[in-house]
Length: 329
Image 1 (tube, rainbow, N blue to C red):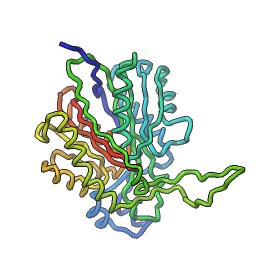
Image 2 (cartoon, rainbow, N blue to C red; image 1 turned 30 degrees about the vertical axis):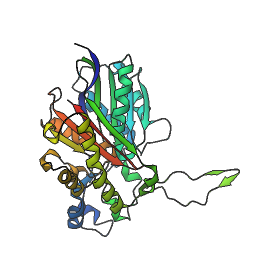
Image 3 (cartoon, rainbow, N blue to C red; image 1 turned 60 degrees about the vertical axis):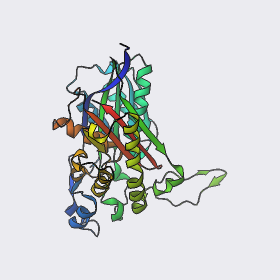
């Protein structure tokens, strides 16, 4: 029997700010209603930061990831944080996590792929950990999206929440290594979802760009793009694994819109029960969305680590980026 380095999810964890902002709360800030939001998105509430930054959320999520496992932080060789809302450009959020938990031997960096970030980061961590001497890696998705939202624009403001979630990966010797991925970027469509940055200004040139740095999204075109593209991405990993949807226990799809998730399930001729949702509780938390859902399912015992259940993680986001991975727990 040939032994391979197989990377498995060893533990999960998440953290969201304590503040719960309901749809009714939003009516005090903008022209909207609970009914309008629920019917279009499936969202009932979201958690918004009252001062905690992205690193604070990621550190607390990491503490929850490590809480019930007997792993010394110095055994962790890699920390990747997927985020588009870092506290600062440098140091990275990952470096702040490394410092907070004293993972002195870990390489740490952030990865920016918007809502697809956690799926991308899993792919990177899987490949890196297999080549490293360390046996453990942390992969975290964390966002404080409330700091980049235009709270006068109900088209975007009602959708998003703050939170962080992640996994501790462990390298093991195994006779099989099930990690099938399908990752993509289409820069030609990048303007469909944008977050402004600092404008160019130096002694030679000053930009006239008046971008305020808020997130902007072409909602209808993104919806159409996702419902046409994601089913094909999921079918791609199934085909390469010689599997069908019948072989999959759950599809953990980015929690952006309940109607979108229902449409993807329908196009795959799959029961919606295989597409669990928690969007009603958290809204769209970008890179944190998939790992928060994963932790919810582990905590509710719908998923059990080490059970050999087969799951698909799939997401899309700014870039435009999208990706799907098929793994065995």
